[in-house]
Image 1: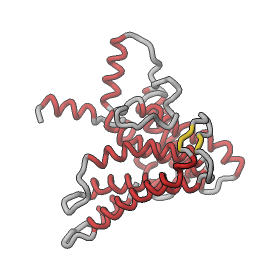
Image 2: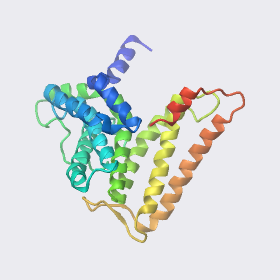
Image 3: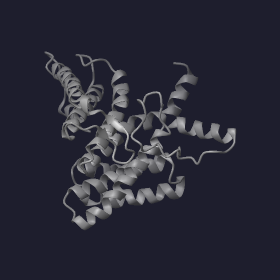
Image 4: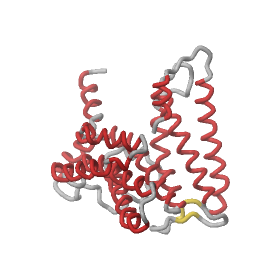
Length: 286
């Protein structure tokens, strides 16, 4: 790789500064360990305020915190908050998550996505106000390209998180759409590593597991929808899946997920293969 190409790749692989903050890492660990109630929300709220003040509420820095804050609020509600508290918080949580999704959509390679998105980015605003001179647009594009890889890596996680939230609200059609929109990004990530075999590492294998998970989520959510009816988005009214296609689509995604999981199982069963407990934990972590 030439020096210029390496520099270009490094620029595209930049991550938001806020993700290096100790409070961000601590909040993520609390969520992953099921202890969101032990201060994760207050940490993310403080970081969100800082990101908005220093970078603006449409920045990639703010987006990195908005999803974590919304996710933390959602998980805390699921712990059993009172109905009054839940009703006050639940819409705020989704608003944060959708705003993060909208900002990230403006940073990713749009050629990866399928025929549209989850509606989060359909408000006609790319998060940068629009208009302006050509020089400003070029500067904005250059800034966005610096975070394109990070945004592409994070977007499917956010889409699936939104889908989980929608499923919890019994908005199953909306959840199906969010999961479907995550699949192209999961597929793109999985393509960058070989089909599971004896030479693949745990990090690459995890990408295959995440793709299998997305397929299974879609199948399960489709089966939760009312039978004999088109799947219609609760806000836009657009048809996501026609009634006649629901069962076949669920079977198709179930089969794809099963195949991926079987590939992973075969890899773990290779004679002489050694995978440390740490690697196994990394493989199964989200």
